[in-house]
Length: 462
Image 1 (cartoon, helix red, strand yellow):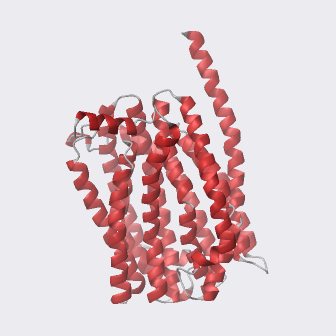
Image 2 (cartoon, one colour; image 1 turned 90 degrees about the vertical axis):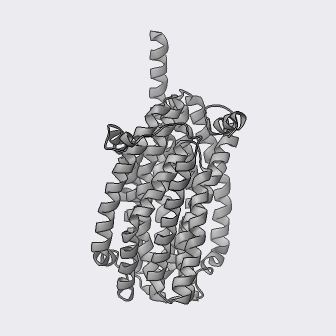
Image 3 (tube, helix red, strand yellow; image 1 turned 120 degrees about the horizontal axis):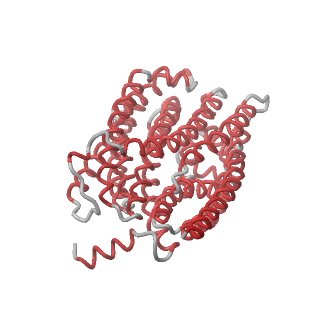
């Protein structure tokens, strides 16, 4: 790479100067693309099993993928600590500290992968029963969980490697990895499910194989890159003092994601009590919901990286402007998504199955959930802002509050009513998010008053 090209790339990856909208969108779009492709993993599994498998298989993939999503998003939340810490060191102009972070993350997440593998393989059936999978789908759900658990190390590794690149300001490289994996997953699903008729097991095998290829490709690319802004040695790959920082920042973020996914799993269990068709309809709706949440999710990841660099460089003014821009941008998109879901949601549900009862159940849930597309941009922007400031403990606490005070109680109450409907159960999501926004707004006001007080004290001392 020439000196001019290297400087141009450095300028693009430097979030402390230049146009905020341009740099945020330039960084966000590849993240959005990666999340779209990742969402397609489960969506393609569900679509192919829905077309070439059985209704019980559809429920099995739906319930099993909820378990897998919980683990994947929890790991992604935890790995955001790596993104945030790398961003801080880049903002502080201390690239020599990046190698030890990556080395510590390698050791930490390898141990985590082994633990997850044992739990998912050994306790697959109890997990399926705990999820209240319909009786016809218990064995199929357990099969999906067991196979994905055997390959969980690849899923964890991909998310950690992606977190490293995003911390370096590079969101395009992870997009390439997941694009390749997504293509492999599609072909794998068609081969194992449509041709070999392996039903749920085939969908799980395709997912694991695709992630494995993605990880191998990412390691090869990382080794061959010559323009990385840090040096790493074998001595860095150990449980060094950076492990504590990763755990301190990452654990609350992981718990926040874990609790969010637990709430969705509980919703799945509540819905499963309503029967096989409702379970399948909710499974279809869940895949559509995963696409609805892509814009705010990519925004939150972008916000964390963008703000962490600016906090490290002392540019709090840019951090606040970035948060406001993110809120307005995602809100505008959210209005469009809300209208589509409310009026034409059956079209999206119809992509996954031809069963009209399942399509109607899926659309019913989406109508209740639709408001989430409008309010989530505000909540996720706040969360990205606070994560960028390493206030991950607050992010976790506000998630606990909205999950256990609003989301789960409302969903449970709606599910036990004589006239229980998926629309009423779905309404629990925007209710909880609105509650979370109120908590974040109060904390934001308090937090910024505290920052201004520190600035005044600092100026008076100098």
